[in-house]
Every structure is written in C-alpha cells, then in structure tokens.
Image (tube, rainbow, N blue to C red; front, side, top):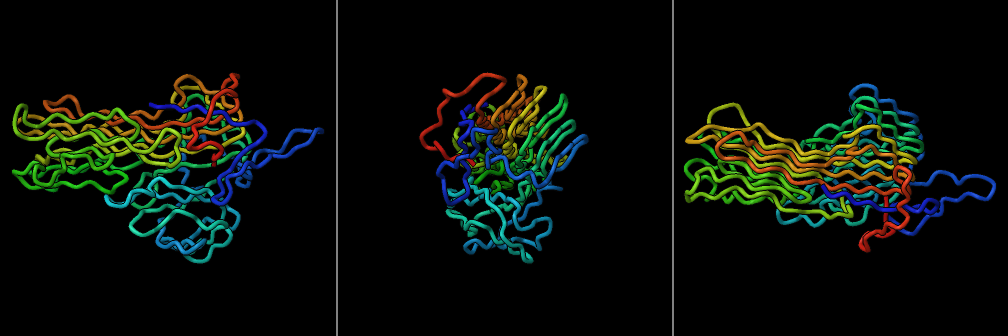
Length: 409
C-alpha cells in the first residue's frame, strides 16, 4: 500500500472550489486564534455519534447524473435530502474503453438551487461530460465533532451510485477502539461466473466499464480475449486474475497446466500517488461455471475522503479501503479460483492527526488459493495524508509533488 504524507500549512489553507486555486488566508488577528480553515466545512450538520453500524447514505444521498448544462445538473430522480447551501461532490466514476481520460475527475462545490430532478451548482463544473460517462452527484455532510464507536460505511457501487464516503468536520473526528470508517469491497465489482454450465467467467469491473466474457465452450476466452485485463479489472477465463489499482496485483494460474490456454492477466495500474483524481479499486476476475452457485471475483475498495480540524484514531484498521477477497471457485478437470479485488482510495486531511499503528489500510483482497489453479490477488490501494502534525511529529519539511502543489480540496 502506498501512503503519501504531505504537509499542510497551519494558517494558510487551500480549497478547490472549481474556479480558483489560489491560497485563501484563514484570517485571524493578534488577539485570538484564527477561525477554522474553509476546508473543514461549515458544521451545519451538527455532531455525529455513530455508536452502531451506520450507513452514511442517510446523511449523504447520491444521484446518478444524466445531463450537465453549465451549472445545472439533471439527475436520475427527484431530489430530496439536498438544499441550497449544501456541499456536494461531483465525480466521474466510469467511462467506456475508448473514453476514460476524465474518469476520476472530481469537484467539491455547493448547491444554489434544487428543483425537481435539477440541481443548480454555485460553480459550473469544468472538464466534465455526461456523454458516455457515469457521474455521481453526492451530498457531503459538514459535521462539527464526529465520534465513531461502531462502523460508518457507504452503500456499494452498483453501476450508478454508491461506493463513496466523504464528509468534513469543523472539530475532532474520533475513531474509538473498535470503531471503523470503512469502504471495503464497495468499489468496482468482481467478475461474474459464466452465465451457464461450461461457460467462461467475466473480467472484473474497472474504470473502463463492466468486464467482458461469458464465452461458451470450448473457447476459454482465447476467442473473446477476456483473459486480458479490463483496464484495472482482472482478466478471466476458467480462473480469474487479480483486480488492480496502485500496484501489486497478480495473474491467475492457467486452468490447464502446461497446455495451450492463456493465464488470465492481472489488472493494469492506474491513477496516481498524489490523488489528482479519485478512483475505486477494480474487481478481480470470475471463475468458470461448473453448475454450482455463482462464484464472483472480489470487489475493489471504494473511496474515503475526510477533512477535519483534528483526526484521532485509537486502534488499527480505523480507516480502511480494502479490496474484497473471494472464496469463488469451481470444479472441472481440476479446481479453479476467482481473483481478489484491489484496495481503494483513502484521503485524510487535518491540521493535526493522532493515528495508532496500522490505523489506515488500503490493501488488496486475496484470490482463491486452496484450489489446483489459483485465482490472482488484488493490488494495493492508494492513501494520501495531509497534516501539519501527526502524533506530535511536525511534517513541515514534507513536500508536495509539483503536479498537485497548492491544489487541495
């Protein structure tokens, strides 16, 4: 897992509002402390105490975008749970094999008007297109203090919405021992089993779209080329390759050792360490249909974005974006395994952080191994931490990569 540690200036903060990337002075004078920086939000949603498993969708409804017309966003249904002044995230989640350049592009902005299925934004989104893309518009809660003693999660990506956990807090986000903010296995879906007995599996889903496959016997996908990667999605024929994102995914075993058939590939690396875009982890490839119940590959991790004045995590695995492992397997001449999903994205931002060892994890899921022909393992996710201080150690000397210097949402 790649973790990128960056320093934030303690008194000069930057917010990406879609129109101006210049520094915004947080203000203050010699008679008292400066007000909270703009990037911690307004606190309008008040405190949150998640003592039991909590679906953040209650506070952060989301919609699939249908049309973009300047600052007007038409979504898939009548909008409820969103008002003028609320913050929203606009995110390009998925394209098609020939149109992926904008995937991962995101904008945090605010709402000026809601009418029926149209949301008017304060800033016209630049660099977005709804043509041939799957875009999410999601409310971003602005809390005060947040205390997590249970689990806070989003719903899974289902081809239109889901998979994203994003909020701000003007105070302290405290994740108590045993508490978790988790986007494990809620990203791109694992590849499915073949559609009927004897049929090949499907590639894992990725930023390029759902996986191909499902060829009838005896092709074993040498005809459809679905043994190749689907962008980050693991390839598949009889076994399934590991899904990818940040690196480290592995290919599957060929179903016929020493034979003429190709081994399903691992997915391809995408995105970047600085998180200039936000991406899900990709799904692992599925497994051949032997007539048993479906046995899909593991899904990728989702996206977790959190900005607060202070973040405190008391124990390991407080923030996780893990790819899902899989027990998917089938039986033929030999036994065959499906592939695991890749880790997702975690971006934490605070003036001060106190993180227990192992508090942040975005690892890949394991492919099915206790079979003759193994499925591939999912790759690592990506983690970015922006802070002026972590557990009392100043990061003032840390530097930002040139490609993203001074552009922090």
